[in-house]
Amino acid sequence: MIRFGPSGNSELFYAQGYKSSLDAPVWLKNRNLNAYEYSFSRGFTVSEFVASELGKKCKENDIEISVHAPYYINLANPDDDFVEKSYNYILTSIKYLKIMGGHRCVFHPGTCGKLSRDEAFNLLKKRMKILVERIKQENIDMSDILLCPETMGKSAQLGTYQEIAEICTYADYLIPTLDFGHINSILQGKLKTEKDFEEIIQHLNKTIGEDKVKKVHIHFSKIMYGDKGEIKHLTLEDEIYGPEFKPLSVVLKKYNMSPVVICESRGTQAEDANLLRNIYLEN
Image (tube, rainbow, N blue to C red; front, side, top):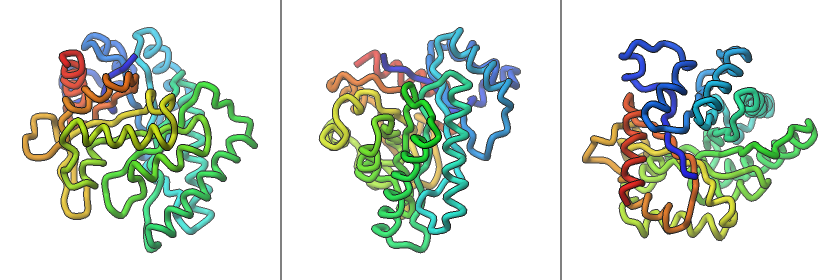
């Protein structure tokens, strides 16, 4: 079953007097949404108790919760000590995800820094294999967990959909987070038609297999971009920058996919998640 929901809480949530994410599951259910992404963008500031309570409320309201690991992660950093921290950010995110009763952990793979793209990507591949081995050595049960490296939106970042597909071949539990706003930014606005979206899905089918592709994680929003890629997130009302969701929704149905679709619109993520859901149901 395809699911729709927001990343974090929209401005409307707070404008209506809600202050705690513990109120989000009921609020989302009342808006016909059934997914929610909790972000550890700046670190782990939530207690395990609150994480557990949030998970219980999500389960009670049929909301599938996912987490986004901290933004500090860079598996392509040449400094081994820094990368050790990145491993720990990912492992701690998985721990919290399990406490919440969720199944999907999103993370940003890394940046090129002063390395060439080839050098940085080779380092990322090496580090990803170490991460997979680390998870095995620490006996972390990944039977119901999906680790989801994200496609990125800036030219200095690693994470084209081709790069993400390649590193997702390293373990069964690795599946892509396809951020179509990021992909569109890298492609300089060329993600327009059903064929454009279908080419991405076909590449993934060949690389990681149809079973994985059917359950990919999706981030969707319109994003302003420049010569170097992503500048800032917009709302679905924007008529200048893309991408549009309708052609993607047709492709999702054509390939019988059942992803979790997380809307990252700027301030209106819950309202726009509902718009995405309606577009999908209407096609």
